[in-house]
Image 1 (cartoon, rainbow, N blue to C red):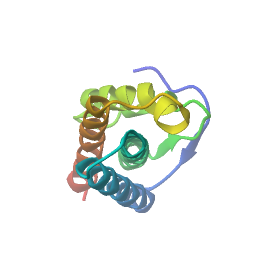
Image 2 (image 1 turned 120 degrees about the vertical axis):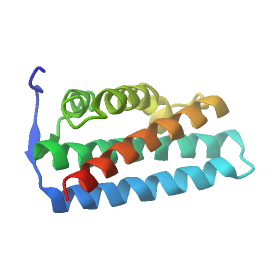
Image 3 (image 1 turned 135 degrees about the horizontal axis):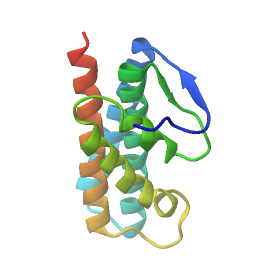
Length: 140
């Protein structure tokens, strides 16, 4: 596995738990917003929260498994780190990649996110949260 380029920050299990709790909170709200009668703007919010959940879960997984997390401007650096973290690393890296593909539009775009994209984003965030949770549980 290649080493991640860019800035990283050391982190520990306690910080991994904090990021995992944040990821779960983002995911909980994304799921809540997704389940409501939505207009296009609230679907955008759900997708944005799912992306934040995935990024926080990726941080948690990396802190738990590697002792560091990505801190560079390019969130795609985190994919390289996640690809080194635990037995679910391939699924987690793929899920993070798919969320990051949606990030700019979900967070900053003027084009609305489709209901299908929202469902997919929430699914990908669930994969990352579950993977990070498993890493923290397995290492307890």
